[in-house]
Image: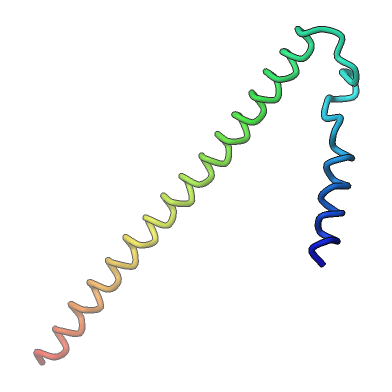
Length: 86
């Protein structure tokens, strides 16, 4: 089983060795490589920012839900103590 995973990983590596986009299959200059790397880094940064924003939004939503839950618990405890007094 481990050998199968290694073979699969090796196949993936060999298939992805040429990672330049189709228009830059054989970079002719350092400038082309630099532009490609800068573009790749910008794309990665943009994707990271999008994911970061999504995580922050989900944390904010969870915070609002926790606040609402705390309020509901407080209301229930107040209602229970009022009923116990009667």
